[in-house]
Amino acid sequence: MFGNLTDKLDAAFKKLRGQGILSEKNIKDAMREVRQALLEADVNYKVTKNFINAVTEKAVGVEVLKSIDPGQQVVKIVHDELVTLLGKKAEPVHPIDKAPTVYMICGLQGSGKTTLSGKIALNAKRKNKKPLLVAADIYRPAAVKQLQTLAESIQVEHFHLEGKQPPEICREAVKYAEKNFIDLVILDTAGRLHVDDELMQELDDIKSGVKPDEILLVADAMTGQDAVNVSQTFHDKLAVTGVVLSKLDGDARGGAALSIREVTGCPIKLASVGEKLSDLEEFHPDRMASRILGMGDIVSLVEKAQESIDLEQAEKMQEKLLKNKFDFEDFLDQMAQLKKMGPLDSILGMIPGVGKQLKNIKVDERDMERMVAIIKSMTIYERRNPNSIDGSRKKRIAAGSGNSVQAVNQLLKQFFAMQKMFGNFNKKKMRGMPPGFPGM
Ligand SMILES: Nc1nc2c(ncn2[C@@H]2O[C@H](COP(=O)(O)OP(=O)(O)OP(=O)(O)O)[C@@H](O)[C@H]2O)c(=O)[nH]1
Ligand SMILES: [Mg+2]
Image 1 (tube, rainbow, N blue to C red):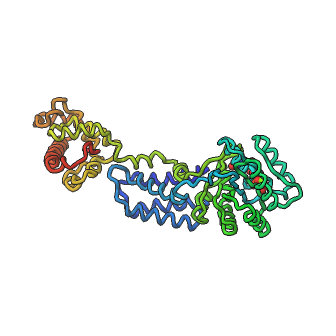
Image 2 (cartoon, rainbow, N blue to C red; image 1 turned 90 degrees about the horizontal axis):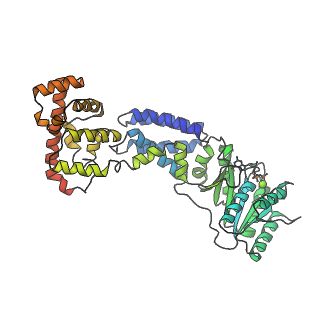
Image 3 (cartoon, protein in one colour; image 1 turned 30 degrees about the vertical axis):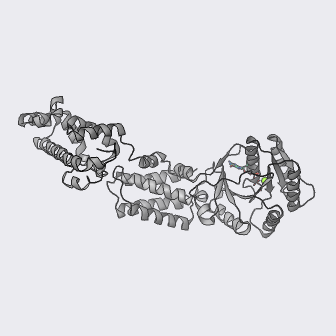
């Protein structure tokens, strides 16, 4: 599931990731593709529209975190919006905190109600709770038998009253549970092909008869927008307390998962991810968003951007800078480390007060390779003593690195300017900075 959507989103972000800066135009271009991807995944039209607006607004107004690729930052924004769309926080089902706690399971025919009932029963049993599976579907001849077989397979009690109507069966089941130390009563109700008044009335009668702690609507993720409409109708009529997305393991396009919360306002609490009774998961918006984006690594990279410069090395560097012992060897080390993080001037720009001074010292990524080549052509002595680099040394270094003397001169100029800047910077700012401030 989500495979297609993930690929499409990835393609949209790839374009942004190549860009040096986030402009309103390149964001809009990328968002057009994201929009298309969402619509193709069968996400509700309105939901898509709101989503794109929210992301665009945040991306355009974003204060660009200097240390990472702007495209990655957009990935993070999209991720966060997806989390919001999916409900922000995980909302667990009502705890089994009194005997009996009652869950009512409802939904359309074949959506996976009986399977879910079994899954919840098994789960409760694993927590040393005593569940009771109640057959409240008397219309489909095999339904009672199906639940009974299922209950026996996991050695859980089941309950049925021959010849009674579902509301009465449910009331009696709860009475039985009270007398028999049952912790959790699970009402497996009947489904219909379509939402109809008769079904709703019956479910409403069950609800008022037993006052369930949790009314779970099972929505089949494979049915896309239908699942959204069905959820809306059930929620309007029954005030459902939670949605369970079933068949999330299938090749559904994901639209239902992404739209239900936003459209109905009802939290998604569980995800049914297979036919086996152990295939039940709590629904976590953040995990689902990461799964959809398939880019959990980038999201955490952005989160950790500031921490990810090796603190220990940064501290050492700080010490050297304070003593004005920063040489080309250190420069090379820093380059290697900074390369992981992005453009050098951007990293420096993260340090309060440095950004502005960098205006006249242009250190951009395209120059980095060349700088490294030049430094590597220096002898160790030269690297440690940049002042020793005279005319003839410059010629040799230039030839060795395949650059002009002019390029070597430029690097030296930049290096000395930087050294000077740090000298001034140290005097003015260092005392006020937290120890080991990431960067220089
Ligand atoms: N792949 C997959 N199949 C599921 C899942 N949940 C249920 N199914 C299958 O879907 C079919 C219907 O499941 P049931 O649990 O009987 O559905 P129901 O809502 O109780 O159906 P009715 O009682 O007829 O209304 C069965 O073949 C299940 O094995 C799921 O999460 N993933
Ligand atoms: Mg059933």
